[in-house]
Image (cartoon, rainbow, N blue to C red; front, side, top):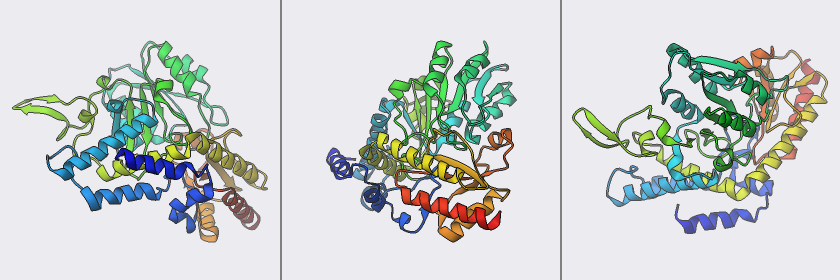
Length: 409
């Protein structure tokens, strides 16, 4: 994105001073529903969609493949998005790998290094499947997976992680924020434990990037896996993997755009990040993601964090005050509020909320079956909040749930 356009974008949105009602004008779908499924995917603002349309209508070409003007413009905008992301996370552009989602980012780390029988990986029992199954799959190579338990609010004691470390531990991998309970882990302490023991640490930032200030420079974690389509407000099919030392991983996919040369049975890979982005990338998605990150930057991540946390905590309290409603997770939570209404099936509750009040929530196990089974819970309804949600929507949710609790329990 040209610097002049970026300056105009930031100038246009800074004046909002976090006026949520002004922000909502950039998300037309919010006129039709009460959207409380942000932990699954967020809505994308007009400026990001316009950037995608601009790509298709003005200069669509292939990234890094051609000397003609459209290919050059595409490459320029794509790399501009990388620079924007790098600035957002306080890292170097060469350490930013674009992926299609957090799941792919974690799998690149899991399958991009050598493992030996007996190698040990530490994670937690409350992880999303995306930060569980890739490590579980390594059992075929003899890797041992250790699951640290949480307390009854979904919070992991870093001391338990330190206790689980053995001479064979090769990686610690943990989610910053639980997508099930909204609990926030002390990742700074966990990263320090890893560094003290010379063990790499992967942080799954699926529920925190864009909702909380995250600086790779301050965190100093080895791997940071980020979705484009949640707190960063980018389009679906976009993700980010930030590598502290890209040389420590090998690419899991090879092909066009990843090699310097190929001669017979020999080849030489390009330097990172190109070696990790083989094939034609999601150019419109990445360009839209770059614009979305600029949008979030203009809003101010600290402002978003304060706003979303306030909504979630108020919602949790209002729901907990309703007879026959159980709310899970800690009082000091991120923007995720899971609950159940009596013995009603969570899917039924979610459907009633949609049909009666146009409230969009998630229901079920939230791709974290071990977490809910650990607590003996057969699924929940999950309300999750984003930068554009309002206090009025919290009231609508509480009143609608109260009506269900009164009418069906």
